[in-house]
Image (tube, rainbow, N blue to C red):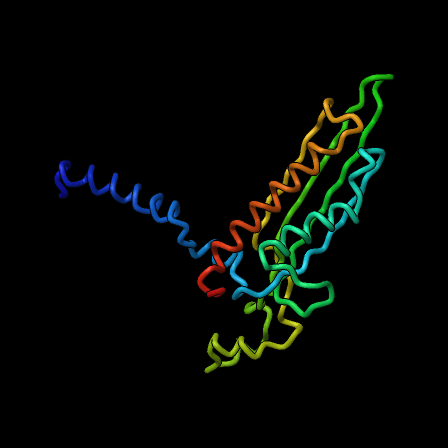
Length: 192
């Protein structure tokens, strides 16, 4: 049996070390799976649906904001570029007038990274005796699928928004900044 005098410091140290490692920016295995792309540029796909919401929230304006943030970080890929990952940004905004002076705005924003993932379970070649998992490197396209590996959704209702789209676009900007920060941190070693 472990003496209590040794157990308490061991538990405290065990809890602090992972937090300290995370604070230093060392990517976890989960972060690497979610965001690692070997420093390859990431194209962005933007989908905006604005049903009576603030006029400034349009596909071109949101796409411009997303592209400029990715370009500033050096991770933007032009549309149509072959890729192993894609950033999808969906913005839905709807406004309804409650009275002459009151407008309620509902918004849903989803930012997610899709990566091309090999589906080991569905590949019948993997059921062949003697096949190794490393054979997945030559996987046929039918066993590669797009899967979300990183996502940050936001939704809300604002009586304060009215015809001003800044609270929504500011939130989109913060979400993009979070993605860029995490992506750059996880891919930093590959970008050297």
